Image (cartoon, rainbow over all chains, first blue to last red; front, side, top):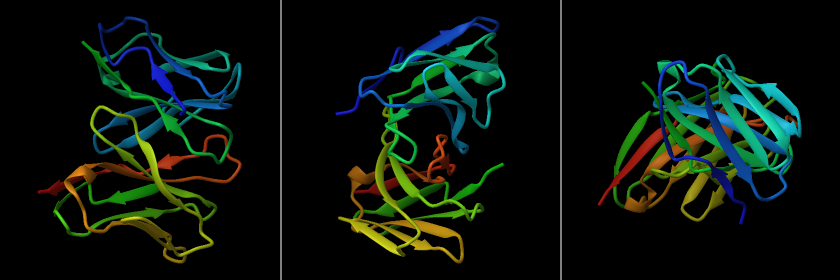
Length: 112
Length: 113
């Protein structure tokens, strides 16, 4: 079975802190994604990566950056966390374009 | 820009009833329409998907109906069970697009015992 793991289930940070969210997939998938999930807004794409060191902006990239130095690992970085970034963050991966996306369990981030 | 609109936001159904969730899309180039199911504390998981060359796809109690001319598709859950209580997301994508999926806003389904 495909497994997508996220480094933390719950995270509490202070405004202005730098925050790292880590995601690892174990199935050699080409594509990896970071989404933000908020009630009533569904899943909104922040960034995605279709290859190592390659990244593209999604719908809401402002305030976020990403890093993909190895194929299996995709990191989301909040350079200076703000309260409006309090949310559930979901990582996903897919084998290639057009394939099913597999999601991790999510990280619930609270910024105080 | 929301390209996939989903309704209702929440739905309560009695056990054994039919649950219906609707989605409408704007981009006529979309050619893949999956539904994802998310249980509390879990990430979404693919439930069923359809391509526009067919008008209906059925897997067990779950059916997708697709209306290309109206740019609408819907999920029907027959004989709904309390275990179906979850959040359901429709999505749409373009073939060959690395970005892949644009999601609807989600529907929280509660099936009463």
